[in-house]
Length: 364
Image (cartoon, rainbow, N blue to C red; front, side, top):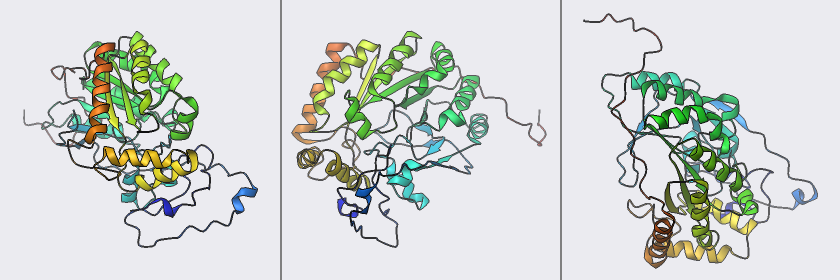
């Protein structure tokens, strides 16, 4: 696993990016040592362009039996995420593609152009049993390339046709582009949206989540969605000890004032290569707080930077984990925020019309 020694700790990230470099992924056969002679200090760090690639998917729906997740079905139209959140738990997934969880993850974005057709086919299968689907549960369904591609909107249109319940989590105010579809889904008890908020500090947000919508824009999105009658919640995630944990109550209060009905909170997770990337980010962006943040993270994760065990990874452990849980629960009770998600209606489901007629003749 990569650590902070893979990156020169004083080198800045390219403009608009979270990671500073491409660290080796855990399957790499070659390891490279970073050597910094300071040449970059004499010139501005150039912008890194996003490369859009095609993921030739043959299936779309993923199933899980995790006790930590409130859903069993999910789908993701994108791999990688241009938002560039330095703490993103999905970064290690790029290693399966032979790419780095560093800059590759946020600049080499794979999309599934046939995702709506695959979804239609899978929902139309006789064996399919309706269950709420988490849309974009790994990488953000409303990341910047969605403006160009519109994949998430087309998926929502298929779900609306089939009356398929859907849940989404996003850091983007672009969700309001699809207000018409979400309002129609919500009117039938089929849709819920959660906006993820890490901090209310716009400067810190730009460092942590360089291409995500600003905190103020996300709060405006909550207000607009709530005004349209759409069940909307807030994810205070991740809570970063020693950096954003002091904002927990203020974030919940701001979201509740904007119209959020539900709330959930997840402490910082640092799986696989993310631990080294986040450590390097701390050394670059907040060097005066880096040691304290890492110390508190270890207190939260049983002495390690990450604890992947079911039952612990989503809430943390030890006195610090208990304290964060108590603060969250007390604030939710005071603000009238329900920690449970909305109940979505699976009884309305109807299989969508297949995209093309089957060549096989019907028996009836």
